[in-house]
Image (cartoon, rainbow, N blue to C red):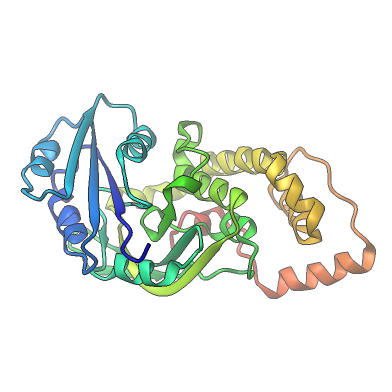
Length: 288
């Protein structure tokens, strides 16, 4: 299919200040075969009214009682009809050619991802964030180390097996994309900056919550490493065995290490160290 329908899913909660800009950035795509699936999560401001004010047949609006952004995104998946989906939060923006570039590049892959800029409340750029893969063809590892932000991925709808998980609400984007990578390694990287993530002043306080995030990541890692999908990867490639041991050592996971041949362990250690893994929770979350 050379002209597939792309669903842009926008969860919204009290986003009246920014949602107009967000919707405009989506509707301004140079690739026109899109639909916007906007799910209002029980807003108490006029966010939903703003969304409904767009007289464009490509805009579809839904409302639900407040259940959180994970539930709103899952509702968006259910209501979407596109071959591919891209999630866009109601205060973020995308480049006018985001969808065009992705459609032209994705080929037969299950997902494509790209880089981002962080912006402030005035749309001024704060910093750039690259999601360039650390390892080629090891996306479960790549995304456990440097998972893309929510609006940086376009993926096939029929390849979404795990839905957004409220149990990992603090790290929901990280959890969603890592789970996707555990199911599919047919992922391609586009080295362009096509997404604008709005960083609010209140987010600077997240540094005081690192301990809570650390617990969430630890729980997530223990879940992934015991998942049959990861165990299958371990059986086929020792890189995943080494990374398992690496996470157990560095995140103090309550799991058993895998024995690896001494010389192979040295070789893999050299490869990992040469990639300069960050290992800092604050980097996983995308802060400077």
